[in-house]
Image: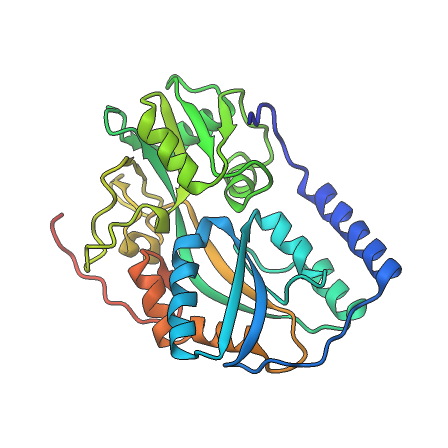
Length: 310
């Protein structure tokens, strides 16, 4: 699917979503259910940004093995769709890459009478991947912006990680292009795995995926990546002299790697239910260790950074 000329007006989208929410509230009213789950038992549906499927799958696996009476049913989808789910009866918890806006939080409180809790879980790097035969493996931010706008001297087809408003698409438009449109060379794959597969098969492709998709899970030091594609080095934003860095955890934590986003859990519960219990698991030791092993930078774990020659 092509994203040619795509330029999201996020304020307009937010207004549309608020109108949708108000219509839903007026038509059906908030649905209140009795609490049949606890922090360690019961079953709930959660909506998760597809960019984080590998690490959240692992989190759920460990959580459910620790609490056999708990069942977390994850639905992986675009970030905008996760937010839509939050105001419906389909989910009480979302895992996305931004906090709720003031308008969204007020709607949940005033209209649906929920006081949402929000927790920052980890930091993720948006990784630039190229084909293994590509000779271009170093890019500055100006290169990346021109690639996305279709004005670059590099003749690459840029592949994003979704057919709709994913968090990666939003980041590229808001943080990199500052609201400008994608060029005609930007296309969308079905999901993150499809981006990797496409880049691996096409020398003229360059892709954007979350770092947890390309980590080498056999490396206990989290210093190597998958061999299916090459990981490009990107201009460091806090380096003197100028340097180009890969999305290693130290570069994420020290804010050397430029394309970083926070991972957030938003829970819509008025009681201590399974959503709250799973969030607590994610923010404490075992959950934070799993984020670390998935190449993300955990927000609550003190990690030492030592200089080494790589």
